[in-house]
Image 1: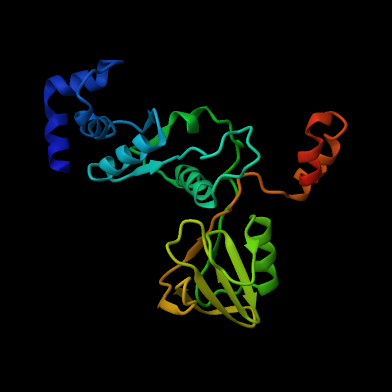
Image 2: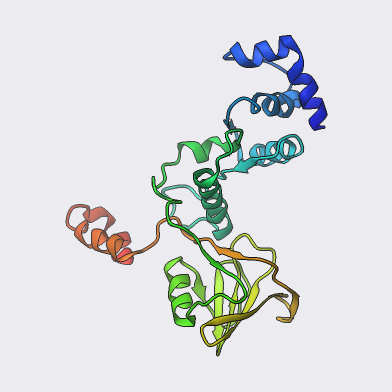
Length: 248
């Protein structure tokens, strides 16, 4: 398939059109090929009409291009008193982090229009992600505090993404973008073992290979600075008092 992209891009008429035209009209089935050919020269932001079309286009582009990222929209509306799913937040943050750290100038980012027009915090992905791996030293209390700050929910039994549980020197953690939760076994302040486990049986299934990056479950993290600003804003925005009380 990628050879077909190279063949299309080498055609003088197509190359001229991709380089010089501000508007190209073509059948929808050719979009992935034309986008992949255009991305050989510069990074692209592709805006689609819906989340479903963004997912489908990104899936097609991954067959044709080596660096395709998705920036999904919240499945909730801004005025709704509902939080987006933790995996949606994590996918958005992972894309921003990849863009901030990547030197690849041929990246394609696919986003639905709702994701593009929705305002977000400018330094959303500026903080480095904490990573976990066997043999690294991480205080159990420090890890628990960090997970709480990243909006993970502490439970007795881990069943959903964004949850964690602590039993003695063992931490069960379900990362937002992981297929299965992971069980982290501590020996003092050192990670001795990490294994994936099954939610239904709670039994370990396979060892974790390599590092795990801990992505936040919320875009607005309730740091001390944010809490202080919420407290100060109560008098200025009385209509938002209920929300500000919850933040502060």
